[in-house]
Image (tube, one colour):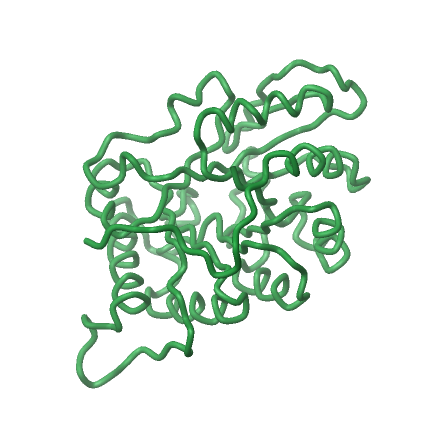
Length: 297
């Protein structure tokens, strides 16, 4: 199973500069991921904060650190025109040396979506259109574009693997042939059987990447596994000594990848160090430029 860490490390976009990236690389993390939170809802439950995901990844790539993957968890389709998103993807893939993993979704914050004019139907349609456009311009030389324009890609460009975050059976069925995997929400170990998503003809057997929020206790190292529900996210809590067996349960469930989020780290680095020690035992190195096999629609 592959592992990566979600930036910002501590739910604070102003605290994940070069020092934290070097720390993550020195500890042996093989992937870094960013998320797309343009606004935080004033609902008392939404505590997610993030910088611009494209700028964050470009910054991480520019350090030259030896991360094997750079991922988006996720880019929200309704916040960008599909062609503008495609251009950002091409640039990130070139900067990374074909190490980008593209997670995409519709965005779940209702008040934010409303400011973008995204009602449920528009939100759904944007996601369908964006995935189809990305497939066309990144993998099929823009056959769907009019003859008056063309979409340029650099020499040696490889389309990144595309992972979809959606619980809509209709969307999964419609987009299954375009996908390389699914992004599924973080779940406690006893609910792992729920992580496959609704059955659909095109997506049921796709590899799964889970974004998992963790609180690793280094004070109570034998703390049993528990769950804290924060409304928008579920945080799995565990003592440092029991972290290894917990992660092994996710490995046994057949996940392709865990993207790990530490929302309560105190900036001391203790949680990160324990997590790194355990994930080094799980990591499956990814050759630069490697792209999972996919079935053409």
